[in-house]
Length: 429
Image 1 (cartoon, rainbow, N blue to C red):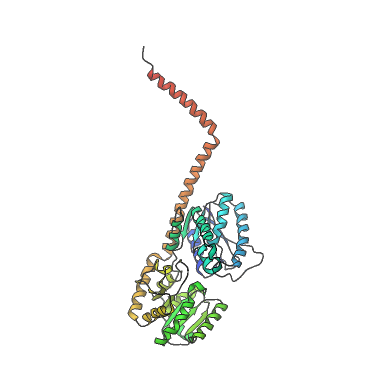
Image 2 (spheres, helix red, strand yellow; image 1 turned 120 degrees about the vertical axis):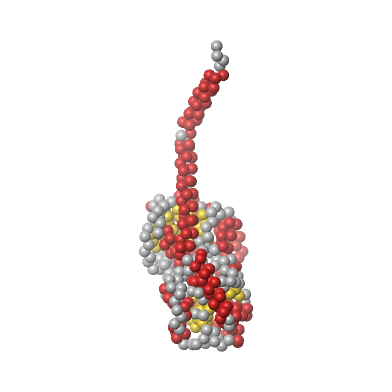
């Protein structure tokens, strides 16, 4: 099967959706029946996988620093991606297009012009993301929902990343839905605690760790706003934040200073993804304070895989897959979220219980083997569906091309059959 994969993101960089793209490509590259062309943004590191060729969108002006979520910069690159995709489709015979995020609308046009079916790989709701990021667009929400629904309904199959998006697919008449849940990619989930992070920040105490970008939807504002309530009752908890671009780090440092907690919050900036397991091993509590969106953040799976207790907001983004048996779920308000931090900080047995349960949860269904099984389930179904469709098309085409001959054959057979029956009806003399 020859597949064209459209990934409208920098690739490869260590953040959510590009990691998901790499996981799908890795799984497909391990099948002997796949030949994949992947079209990605100009920015990112080169990746080599068997049976996969990476093509970077040629953009008039090279764009770096493309942030998560919809933006003018993304739309600019998508404009060039459309024409580059069109060129690739005209030059090659693809059996399927695998499209993520807004690239699904490019796939819809390719289906219209060239009759190529597409898979919609849904990491987040484009409609919801636009309205949440640009409040002035709320008036157009019904229009965005309509086009997103059309994209889902027109796909041969949909591959949402979480249960909430799977529900969105079913609501919009998805023909086939296979949920490709995020997974942990920790290579060493059992690394021992060494105290290196305590030395790096230069402060003793229990470490609360956040890793990820500092976009508004991640809830870092909630985390920082909750910390004055923590420091009132506990003078040992240190908050360490890894990730973010310089502008965001500066903004949150200023916020922490205004709240009087700047000495207890440590911004380390970006760190290599390969060092994630080392940093998780040094933490006492891991936190994911997301406040917007319905897709489950990828970070919670390596968090739990590390065996450390995890603090999450009590919102559907988390509760659709995690219960209070695997993580601590706190109300997404500063004071109540602070109570969650304090509850974990002061109860070692609770931390150990949640850490153990969370790790077992991830090892069961959220590691690479489980991911690969789900991707194969999706593509096995698609191959069967495409095979049946082609058979139906061949039969229909044969009938269309030979309808006159078939009609004459029918008339001849009818006449001969009538003569044959007449022989039995004639009485013997």
